[in-house]
Image (cartoon, rainbow, N blue to C red; front, side, top):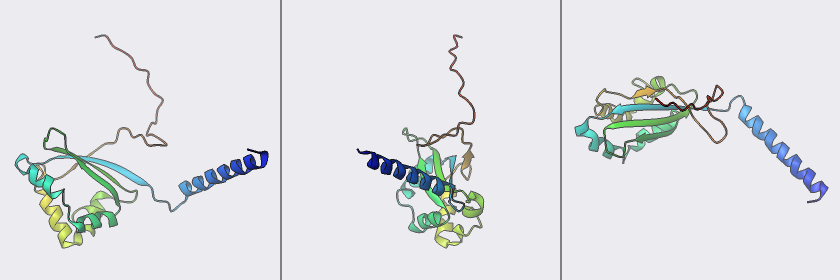
Length: 156
């Protein structure tokens, strides 16, 4: 590569990095938050709950998307037990109780309200319990806030 081409390549990379930095710092840019929940489904209702989630009603999916849910994933242990985990990624301004809970505009749709009320009858405790995030790794960052501790092997 000749000198002029190298200068153009470096200049292009610098401009690209600057544009990326501006986009990331843009005041109106929406960021996301991650939430994890757990629940137990009544054992005798587990298969029916799973079946419902193989065909979630379109009104529910549309409602969740339009109220800031960007990703929602429910997981069950491979052994088929009844303890489930749900990972939710939302726009940063979403408050789960305010925007998706009882009395929210999301639940003003009669089909959504019926779905949510029906699903809550499947749970042993009646709802999902929010878990605290301990650590997250992304392609560009992590939630580390402290320097790493050395690994100490104990011979107890």
